[in-house]
Length: 316
Image (tube, rainbow, N blue to C red; front, side):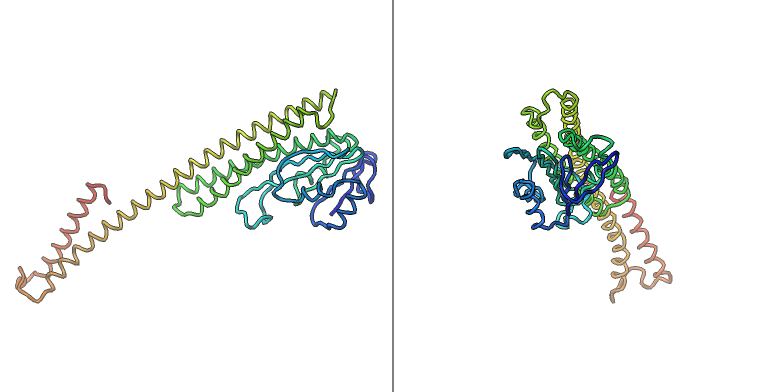
């Protein structure tokens, strides 16, 4: 699906054909023939568009003639997008293709970050200022990383409370999915930071004397570093927590086995006494008028003695 936006007055409106200072957003579902025609019409390398659709495309930037390509990874909630990946959150590439007269964004899924710009782009930047628009996308991308990291932290706290009253593996599986998401975040935040630093160092966006944009890029790099550090901290905490709770669950299981073993032994002793007195041989007290009562009392006393012994040894 191809949407073309243009500033008309104070509104962002859809138009039919690409024009100067427009924004073209490419999102699923994809029509590859339509994308190829668009690439030929705009004289954009078709491989740029195809690469951005690849879910596993790495963060990078390159230039061919007057066309610039920037690929960064952005986080999304994994709501059935990748059924084979059980991570709660995943990262996907978003491509920014900068032309002399317009900007293209390409993403393999319907990205909430792009949807936000479709509603709020005029509050931050005009489409004619493409470099600032790209920088604002970088800025919003960091915002979503930080937002999802805070959500992960909340989920970890909730699961931690559930684990205090549960010995099931379900909660540990939830933590495993969150840890997998954090690994994705750490790797892609590091890759994004490397791309941002190189873009700043090489002045890939031709900011020149635009001090405001330069300072904004520097702030974005700092925020990206903070998000990376936060993701590392959460990943370490989560890894240690999973190990601790796995040990607790194993320890609780050991206590349950000890109790069941003690109960089994305590119940076995009356059975042993009853079995002995059930033999067809001469036994003590077999002719006593209260023989049955004596056997019952003996069984209870033996069981109580073992229970007291187990309690002293803290086995029960």
